[in-house]
Length: 85
Image 1 (spheres, one colour):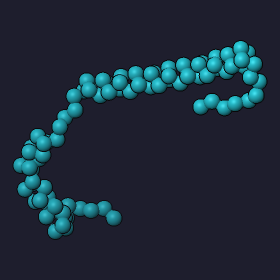
Image 2: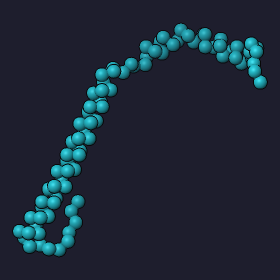
Image 3: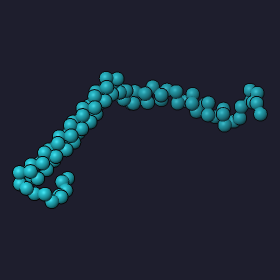
């Protein structure tokens, strides 16, 4: 059903309430911190670097465990299976 220009009392009170609070919006906007557009780029770069460091540490630990296993099995003659974390 299409509405023709009639408004209910709830709509009138809502409009009046919004007009009454229009002065508060500038104070509210002043209270909300606006993020620096460059800070999001910096945080993205920091996350990228952290991910790269974690990847490097994981690969390095895998290589060290593999080399240690090779050393233990070949030099020390230990041929039983073992688990390294």
